Length: 133
Image 1 (cartoon, rainbow, N blue to C red):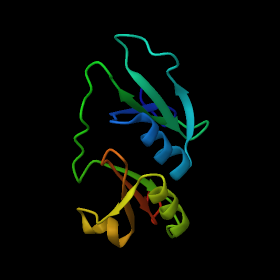
Image 2 (image 1 turned 180 degrees about the horizontal axis):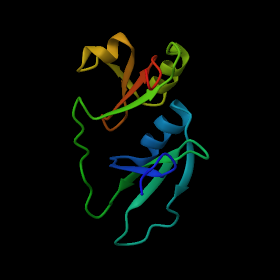
Image 3 (image 1 turned 135 degrees about the vertical axis):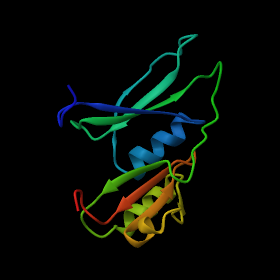
Image 4 (image 1 turned 180 degrees about the vertical axis):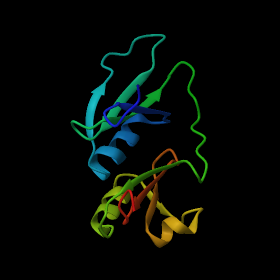
């Protein structure tokens, strides 16, 4: 049964796993939880990032034999509810790690936070509100 203790994995393709890892680890501050080691023909390369000890993580994948082009839309959002004003130093760190600050498609997110596109174009929203609000 799904409840508050259920672990969640979100998988996304990436053009460049090193760039995605740099953004989410060095920029956002997540930890590398696991990565593939040696290249194995027929298998995906991947890196899993998330909060250490958390109940969710991103699995960022790349299939070098049949690469997928990421196709994010303006509404493919990863929202982090901070419960505090967005620290501009974090935004600068995300930009230095390959992110690009962008206007939100939904003005709600601009009113309550900052949106940063990751190296593959997926959008991270740092929201100053808390959840539930």
